[in-house]
Length: 147
Image (cartoon, rainbow, N blue to C red; front, side, top):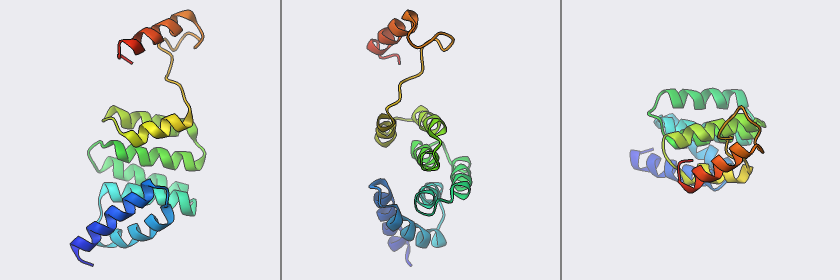
């Protein structure tokens, strides 16, 4: 396989994985990863592995290695969060998505968080969410775009 073919195949695999066709993406990524390795492709392979073959332990290890071996990129944390969701770990998935948003805004991460239907953390974590201080400070900070 030439470099151009592997690049095209990698782009196709990423597009398929983002569209939810993880089986097709898994097949393409297995071919591409024999030729070249990158943190981005490894994280997508890990996500597809978790979705299709339910190998959560291996997928988490691969994705965490990809994150450690690269600059902080939001898409790597998106795939880590997707793996946690596939494994049924909603809280850890949310933490991964939030870490990804710290390195840059990404529409797919925002969409995953909205799909989960989760709220932001309370402004003052020591107080209950329905406390008036938390409620009105949250509203104020949202309107000032500080939160």
